[in-house]
Image (cartoon, rainbow, N blue to C red):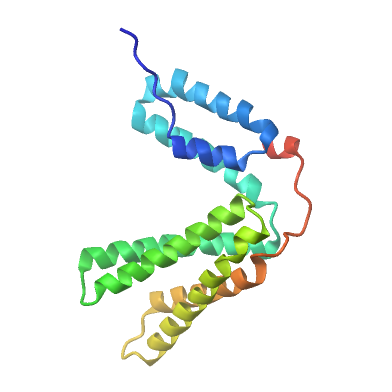
Length: 196
């Protein structure tokens, strides 16, 4: 009986294909897939082999983030930070279940979705038209960040985490409005330097 070799996570493979230039897709994705199936999967098992493959895909991300302007780089880092914070906030709201937790968890998930969309659109260089719809997300982040900052300033007790997040939301929203939907400055790097 012939066993079917499992491939790497399809979503990670697809993300890598989107990151790579057309000329490099087949070679890089094929080599990683081959190493996954022939070496990592038999040696490490499915979970550890999947984590190895995802780590390989993630290792390509910084190479492509170098193409964007300095403000674009800051936007990416802030988006990652905000994504992590809002995921943590949504998890804690669902865990602790204080009154009104549903609305706060939903808001945190919505902000996380905006952050993830910003990261994906910017990293995959999806173009100015695709980025423009995120202006609404930027305006929403400014509104939520401003309201959170004012609420914390007038609250009975000071919450440092809320101030940090509200300032980051304001900054991210402003950067989104400034940078998204505009052409990135600088020339893309040649294929050889991206892959070498």
